[in-house]
Amino acid sequence: MPAPATGAPGRSGASGTTIGAAVLARLAAQAEVLAALDPAVRADEPDAVHRMRVACRRLRSALQTHRRLFAEGPARELATELKWFGAVLGQARDREVLAERLLAEARALPSACRPEHTAGRLAAWSRREAERVRPEVVAALDSPRRQALAAGLAGLLADPPLRGRAGRAAGPEFSRIAAREQRRTADRVRTALAAGPGPGGDTALHEARKAAKRARYAAETAEPVAGRAARRYAARMKAVQELLGEHQDAVVAAAALRELAAGTDGGADAGTAKGTAKGPEGGAPGREDAFAYGVLYARQLAAASAARERLPEVWARAAGRRLSRFG
Image (cartoon, rainbow, N blue to C red; front, side, top):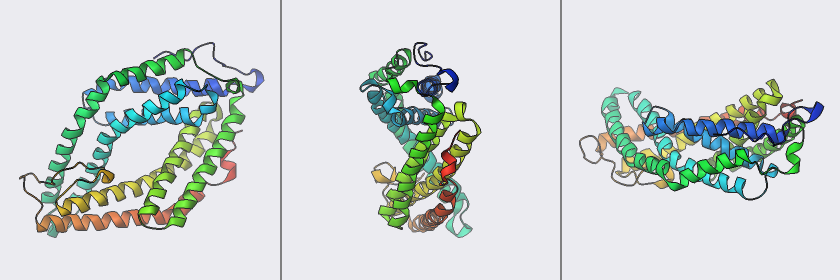
């Protein structure tokens, strides 16, 4: 992956690094990560899909957050293609997260719920899910669309379509962007808290999580310029993101368990595959399995509720106006 073109705005006299140079450096670093992970994903190495998906998200977030730096066209198209590739990777990663959560919870069940038996059924279901989605990931890696994405990233870095505003000093621009992303996240947190428990609230909390993640990634881009102040901002937004991630994971797990208990794992919204929820023996869930799934389901509802209740406290640490003042 080529480094950013030397002809791009790089320094701004006494002001230091330009915003354009800082964003291009972020894009170059994440594009390199994305390309380097290809062999690991093909080999199905642990955590490889997760790391590649994160690189996709960071690239897309940088292009979206700083879209005004780029001319219309290539940058927007790359963001669209990164969304596609991230979604393909997400199918595999979401199932990994779901399986890890359910297996850990199953092994912690009381003896009356036959924890090892329940974990065995869930492990078999998880293997079938992994076998179903893995070919889709490999096919995406081999696709002309993925090759075009790699070429597009290389082209953007070799000849960045930067606008004049990319020559502005990075420090003040990063502070302005951090404040904007903080306000954006605050709006979504307020909406989520006002919605209360239920499907509408769950969706709103998920949107707040995505906003906190975007704010965090914006601060990560600013770290080489803003240093400690950007790291502090990123850490506070990460805490919000992780709390809301726990909520989302619990909601998804509860939906999957509801379908497993009913004898089907066919809800697209739950992040599960269509079909019959058969165990290692190939049979449909029995009453004891359904009871264990019910206990797990109740625990997921409790975890989601606990995360929602903690949100005001965690968000308060990320909401201060001084947090976005990077210099």
